[in-house]
Length: 72
Image 1 (cartoon, helix red, strand yellow):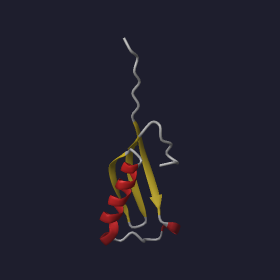
Image 2: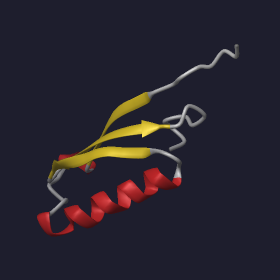
Image 3: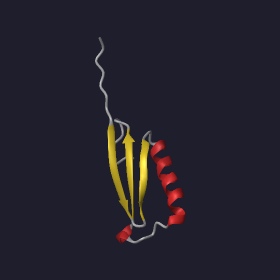
Image 4: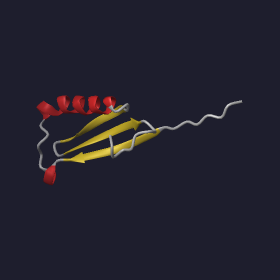
């Protein structure tokens, strides 16, 4: 018998534009979300959902246990 541990770290991260200005236009949202997802993948995470409004972005992400949220 060999003991095992299981870690499932899921975070809800919110990014806002400076002064909550509506800078995120509809024509760039798709490219921005793809970029964020790629950045998370490069860190070994999984972007479960990315969405937002013109002044903020919500990210639901599963991160590796050996990565600090601040480093990702």
